[in-house]
Image (tube, rainbow, N blue to C red; front, side, top):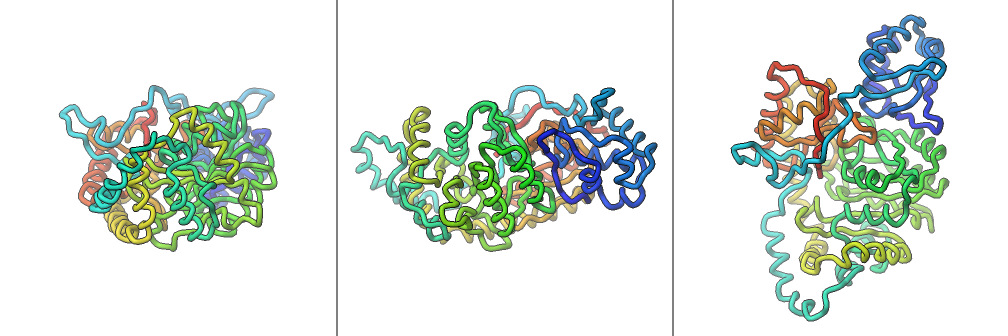
Length: 496
């Protein structure tokens, strides 16, 4: 397996030694033109070599991999024939994707029972990496909030910064986790997605450079595209982050903003080690880049202790360039639209001004219900974590039973497996599975470059074990039904 590096250089060129370093050891040991072409294709599909990057000249790559020039020429020919590179005399050879890999059509909202089969069966929703509300806890929170609502109802109900008590509770939890925080450093939002959209709206203008992990949270990518930003990428592979490439990318692109999910990364489930967090903080500070840390899944720690906030590792004053967002969607319930931003008090005031122009204020009722949930999080979370461990094991067993040829890394936390199908048919498989009533997050939805990660599926373990097994069984039937899967992408699904 390659070492997980991605190349996104300022002049969109990858050197021969850089490309050779990404190739699997077995290809370097016995370089054949078909194996070399397959390896380069995999690097493109996996986002480790970005699209529209110029590949090394044939002679240079031949020297770097210890092969004949004829071998490299044959590999490039195969890649051209299959549509993964294009060449122009005098300009070189550039990476791209076959026409069928480019997504077309409008997003289809899949979740909460929408869609489904013609017979009205809503099917099995594996596109949403979130659970239903924990039994009893939400009802208790509503019971606690009910007698307190009349007092708040006597006011006009506009709290653009958020309810003061909830701001204080969120700040207190940051402080307990090791990041001293005052209530005026908190803005309560309608979920983490609104929090991210507000940050992007305040800090970025069309055409600004931003950097994200690749793959990353699909809806965050949608927000960046909607804002018409130029997106660079840092690969997150099964081996985790390559900080050498991350630092190089930040130095060369000097982005306005960097978006990261270091805690049980979505979709891979990877956990960024402390030393890499320090390097990321130093690199973004050196380039003057705003670092947006998404902590939405930070509490879903299944096999390791929940990490402290990344901003808590910054030197004195160094956290001012770090903006942390989070929500109750994954720990409690996505239908409770309560999220937050943690930043400097000045930044919070500026973000609130942006927020007022969009929706004036958040739901007072949702925030009031969220207050006891936030204050009792440490007591209620262990049962949630135990349930997810059971469901993760159930998903693993189902995959081993129905699709033994697929592979994955078991994540130490988070809500899903990032499954390798072994061939680039993710979108076609998701279309075929949808017809059978299973909705799934195809890999390309999580890629910075459209059409990448076509050999991946994100499969959450947020449903009960019997539903997971039925969903995997239907996926396996769609995969094994004897009709070849086309690599074409029909339409992008919305996922959470």
